[in-house]
Length: 185
View (cartoon, rainbow, N blue to C red):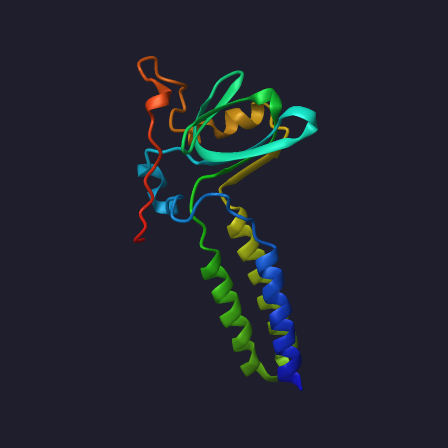
């Protein structure tokens, strides 16, 4: 009976772990591992929601190229130039997360509490609480999100753009190519 209750709690906890994690908008294998960020020549993945006609919003995502006082530049299949005044939400992701590792350790730790006998009523909740917190924290790590972003937000994230100092004078942004994704990773 105790095992059935424990398994039910474990399944519900697993759903909470998965539901509490941040969703990544970047394509699979696009974001670098945390250790590779310093050697990465590309900007982070920026997803923007912006106003269009009739109070509708559009969503676009791609490599964060740069931003200036009035516009944000994003590259995917083509270059998008979006006026800052129309942006209602911005989410910048800079690296790949290890959510599955954290969730796996939480699952293994939770299952290991079956060997704790009656102390399971203390150790199981501790594993679930710390595991859910750690997994959720990992999913939001290095993620910069803001509704109606201001200049404070743009100044904070500019260091993660391909051109953090702004657009170089001798470059035509229309000839930039997007990052190739390694399919074999």
